[in-house]
Image (cartoon, rainbow, N blue to C red):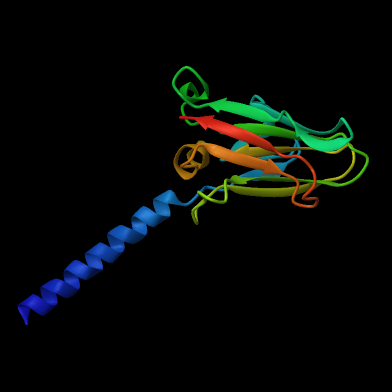
Length: 164
């Protein structure tokens, strides 16, 4: 009887420990908004510096997200010295029609807690995306995020390389 009770108690402890680890790995969630009204983890976008800028452009007859590859340095000499301050990404559609912006982990390496941001920008519109530091340091295991237009598969995407 004691062995059964002990095994049930031990099982409950393992389940509780496993669920707390799973909760710790959940992404905090990126927030999308305007510069004046947006905020992330209690900080207004206006108080943050823009870390990355993406612009939808027409280059050589192709619709692309520019730059083709961006690097976000989270090591000590980079943005990691900010002590957990969120990352702010400026996204602008300089095209004459609607354009999608999908920022996500490479599908081959994506887990259930992977960062995933999808927005649609009207022509000439600019939005800001605030990403908690935890989403970039713990959730992006491969260190490579993909940027693409989820509305038009033929448009050329971009990469975001996160150095940790």
